[in-house]
Image (cartoon, rainbow, N blue to C red; front, side, top):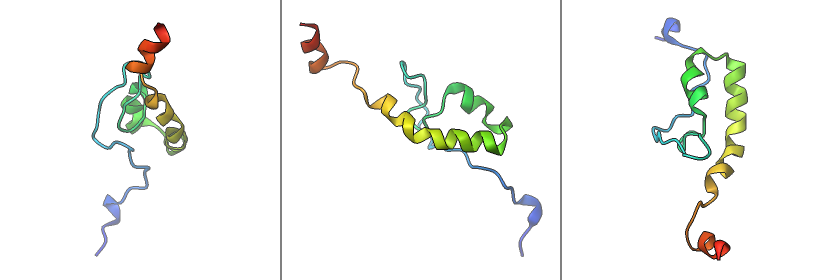
Length: 77
């Protein structure tokens, strides 16, 4: 027996429970959303959520850049 009252037609959160905000990109390293997007998620329309979900793959590049290490030291020399 299915209970239609408890079924919801919502876009699920992309949260993967790795909640660490990247200091420079200012996005969560787990779900790639901004702090504002995370805070407003439950109040967003389905269209707003779809737009954000569609934009997430492009944000991964923001986290892939190294900030230091050997290459950065060599560039300063």
